[in-house]
Amino acid sequence: MSETPKSLNFIEQIIAEDLQNGYAEKDLRFRFPPEPNGYLHIGHASSICLNFGLGLRHNAPVNLRFDDTNPTKEEQEFVDAIKRDVIWLGYKWDTERYASDYFQQLFDWAVILIKDGKAYVDDQSSEEMAIQKGTPTEPGTESPNRNKSVAENLVLFESMKKGEFTEGSHVLRAKIDMTSSNMLMRDPIMYRILHKAHHRTSTDWCIYPMYDWTHGESDYIEQVSHSFCTLEFAMHRELYDWFLDMVYDSKKVRPKQREFARRNLSHTVVSKRKLAQLVEHTIVNGWDDPRMPTISGLRRRGYTPESIRNFADTIGIAKRDNLIDVSLLEFHVREHLNKVAPRVMGVLDPLKIVLTNYPEGQEEWLTSENSQEDETLGSREVPFSRELYIESADFREEANKKFFRLKLGREVRLKSGYIIKAESCTKDADGTIIEVQCTYDPKSKSGSGSEESLRKVKGTLHWVSIKHAVSAEIRLYDRLFTDESPDTRKDKGFMDFINPDSLEVITGYVEPSLKSAIPEDTFQFQRMGYFCVDKDSTENQLVFNRTVGLRDSWAKIQEKNS
Image (cartoon, rainbow, N blue to C red; front, top):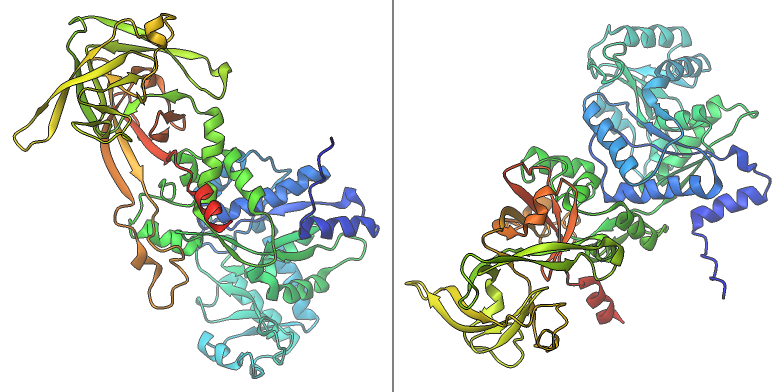
């Protein structure tokens, strides 16, 4: 039976209709245009997947263009991070572009607008211009500089370019319509003065084009066919088209801007400005902190490119903003890691077990499979000895019938090993259990084929041999915010919802096979969750980040809502 064709989202429908109406597929070109003023976050992932996905679907080129028009906030570090993230997500761009490549062309076009009487230099203060803009219900009033002569405006604009004026003293404005119902059309600023070095052009320029002037013209220069952006730019489309009208040649491709909705994620923020505040106020340890919703942070935490692409595909493209529960993202990484992450044993809250009838000084190596999901991952040898660590929560002196772990007088199986029975326990002065004495059944080794090994007991525990255990720093991450919508509350700021318990650092013990693990290697710690080797690891100290637990909270939400 053939699969039902997947329905097109409204963006794909726009392109399909354009092609049906005579648009040549060879003229399709897309772009992903980040501003290099921060690291990309999970919201950008949807845009990346959309634009590069369209390129793959239509075998069309996709540009990676950096809209680098603000030297006060942009850095090469951000450029490099963005490129790493796009590559890591699995995409390749056709050409790498920068808006700064077009500064001269944009300047030349601005001069043409001045000559055509469609732009003028204004020396009013920003406060005066804001008042003259009017309100959404009241028209604006014209600047006293609006009707200066072309010759005077050309001289002033050239003086701006030469650095003869101070910052904030002069701007170039487009002459459009101060009575327009769209306030963005009320003589918007095209250029401002910034005596700041640019990360690519150094001090070649001291006037910089505004985003609205730069963005559409850059699309046009690159002959981008379809320019997709988020809904907050819907009101900008009229201005986007007006600027294109000023330079458009009918023999060339005219970009078409269309907007799609943001997909906000619960218990986080996806504003680069707010993420920058988290970094600047050291709420987190940098842009790639595993608590951050940045792509770099998710990668460091152990998320996979496949899980993020699958998440973006699931939430899709829509016309209305929506809040997506973070548990859906966790579901996708859990689902993918369940298929690809090797199973290993690590104990996070150790309790000492002594097998009193196991010969002192003896050790053996047990075979344990690396995955129940994928046989091709093979198996490994795990050392076993008289003294072991298990999780403290896996032992109780007394427990009810529903407790299928270790308790006095009860048997459990050690993963890939023997059946053991708790005989007694030792407590410290505070009454805390510090050791459990057990016996083991030497004929019950897993996989031995003996009758005793086949007998079943309820409960299987993970463990590590104390003699061979590798100490590891374990970083347990929780959600960074206590409120599901921390940046939409009017009564409080998003910083008021910082979770003080978003990070807990403990010492755990892992099996020696992990000594050779390197940063970004992911594993399932049996019964404990998925973990990733952190870049802070050294030759003498392994550091693991918990990616996500084994529990599927998204499934429970779906079940509750069904």
